[in-house]
Length: 174
Image 1: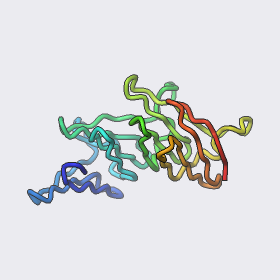
Image 2: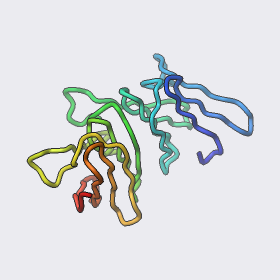
Image 3: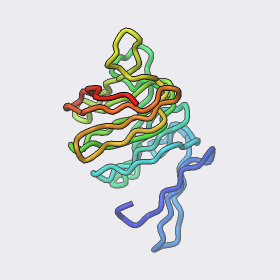
């Protein structure tokens, strides 16, 4: 990361942060404290432009690590909250030109995170809407320098969207 530390997500042992200057590890796992993860099985890691570390948990949602306070904020799918993260199995993060975070999930489509309101907007596949995602199983997402978002789908090919604020406008399906 920007501080020269190495972040290591594990497949069951939580998150390790190694400081090469001090040669020390910090270790984070699930617990009841505000210094814990939602899940010990880490999939993607993303360091935002603001230095926040976005941690995708397998079937656990999203943990965001704030190194300034050495604590986590958690987001996961809440069944009766339409503004919550949709899909707890996070596969990928990306950040657009405006600094917004986009989250890919396995089965929950793509989520846009609105940091000011701390809510999510979800984009999913809809067979009645040809402008929707081709699959809710999104394996990878990446933004480009033209304001677009590329999404690789499981059994859905590649989708290219133009980002308009918090909206996705489908431009092409491959």
